[in-house]
Image 1 (cartoon, rainbow, N blue to C red):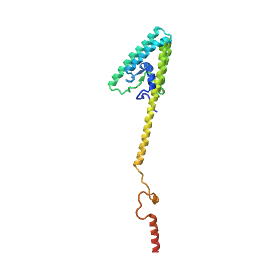
Image 2 (tube, helix red, strand yellow; image 1 turned 90 degrees about the vertical axis):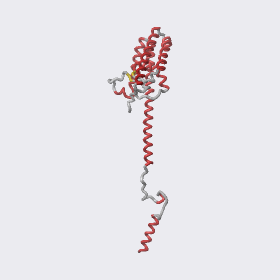
Image 3 (cartoon, rainbow, N blue to C red; image 1 turned 180 degrees about the horizontal axis):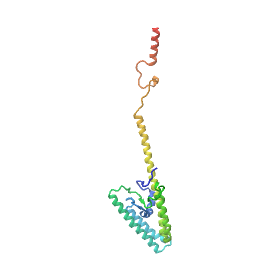
Image 4 (cartoon, one colour; image 1 turned 120 degrees about the vertical axis):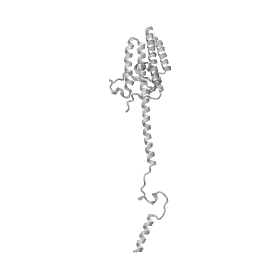
Amino acid sequence: MPRYAQSQPNFMTGLEEVFYFPALTLMVFMRRRIGLRLLSPARIIRTFVLIQLYAVFAVFLLGGSALDIRIVQGFSFVFLLIAAAQYWRSWRAFNRGSDLHTLSSGFSHLETGHIPNFLRYHRRIYRIGDPLFCLAVACYAWIVCPPLGLWIGLASLSLRMFEQARYEAALTRDFEIVDSMAEAKIQQDTAEFFSKPKARNTTNQPPNDRVGLPTGIGPDIELQIAQRSKEKQS
């Protein structure tokens, strides 16, 4: 089976769109070379506004202080700067002819040469490794600033669901490609079978099963004539 290390679907499903915006706040920290369309300025700004709204409402719901609001807002500004820098790098790479998929979710910083191959296959480092690492950071952030820890925890779950949805979409696409190749092979074999008819042996077939109209004397009548000729000669 393929590794699906960087296999990407050609579109984002509705489920991916739901989990995308919280997940993006962690992807810009955990990934490099994120696709250009995933880092569009409109999506970056919408995610920034979402964190700002969360900083105001969630802090009051959790009974946080003004310092907690500033910490979450500071996190949103750091996200904005890093996301803008990643977009600029992706835009420059695109203009230089980079072949990176524009919907790629990037390359994980955890994907180094020291991790086992088990985590490399089927995007396990992206679907499991990155969300678990972010969830550990969320537990630590909860001690310092509960609203920020809650946001990072929710974003970690969103990252997990986002990557799983992308993996299943890419897997379904690859299954369809394999099925199409199998069907094309069957069609090719069928066309070759009928385009090259085999020679038919008609020597042992009865007269009624032979192709074409009967001409001349049939083999049964010819046999009777030969027998009568022998009787006359004797």
